[in-house]
Length: 119
Image 1: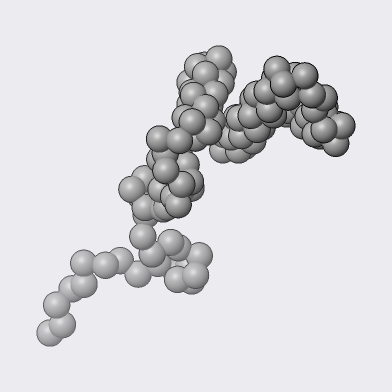
Image 2: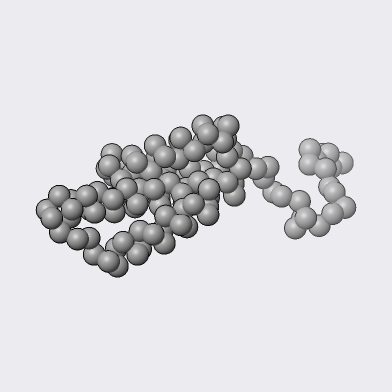
């Protein structure tokens, strides 16, 4: 006599049933947000500015982000770091009685407009 199996057989195809239930611990650290950029030192000013802006956006929005909102918030945070860097370069140029590069000013305007539209 055969021993009974502990696994129940379902009439659905095995392709329709996930083999393993989803686990929050599965997935990449990059995808779940625990690692920002794996090959970049997280102590740099740029990364700290991006992460700080991301945290402020999260508080402003009331807590955990949905996936689409997290993607948008990350883009806004990166643009904020880039724009802050550009502003510093403009200030340094003016401090030396020079004019900033017109291309950089145009790019700054376009990026700040994009950031505004993402918010």
